[in-house]
Length: 100
View 1 (tube, one colour):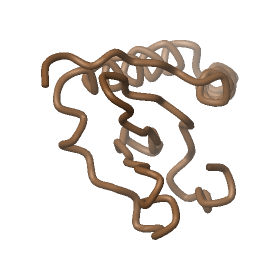
View 2: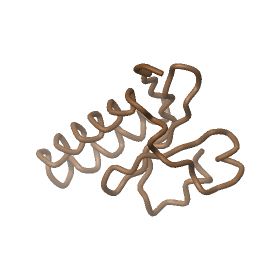
View 3: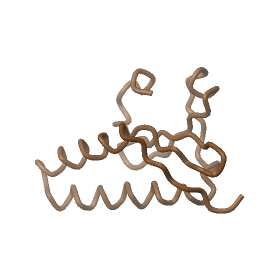
View 4: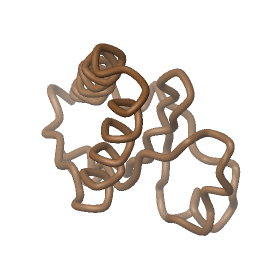
């Protein structure tokens, strides 16, 4: 298949906003850098999103959830037809099952 469309769900947009807001309190430069990195990596899913593994949780795997690791965060997504649906962006130490 060719390029996929990227759809970012509202929960993932809120996650991204929360991440950037938190980092901005520590370092505005770091917040901008991290935002750019996340956007770049999410954009890379337009090409071959199947390269990313399924989550380990059996129920979520059955729903098609995959993840992309971006430093300390996990980008959770599902591939539907020609669209990559970005569902959540969570800190990698969180128990993600409760948020998906």
